[in-house]
Length: 133
Ligand SMILES: [Zn+2]
Image (tube, rainbow, N blue to C red; front, side, top):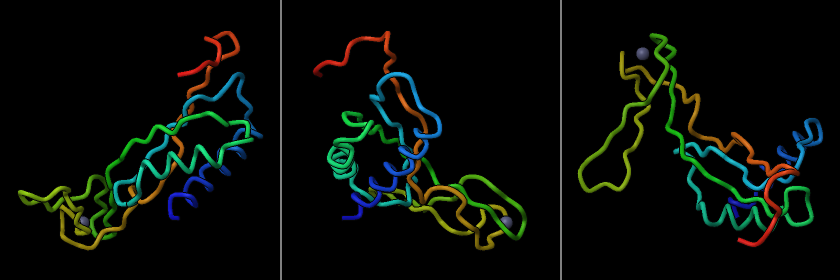
């Protein structure tokens, strides 16, 4: 289960972060950025998160997943930015091309393959009481 190991490393990173930088209140949402080259089931990831966070300080929090585009860097001409996409009618998804839009050299992927925590939504002690949805 790919999503389980992804959720597990997210959780480990988050707990480590929280032990160094504790927050006041309850974490209700964990915003993560999913690189578009990372293939996963968001449903499975959220489900894994629900199960893995049980009994931890972030139990009950929800994952909010945002997809981010691929970013590339060209060792040839120094271009850095969006990848070029190959898209044809009828395709469900555009496919990033690993060739430089400027000079055609092979580029390195600098973003778009990872899953990373971006922000946390915290319900403060003075905020609305934790209740049912
Ligand atoms: Zn280039």
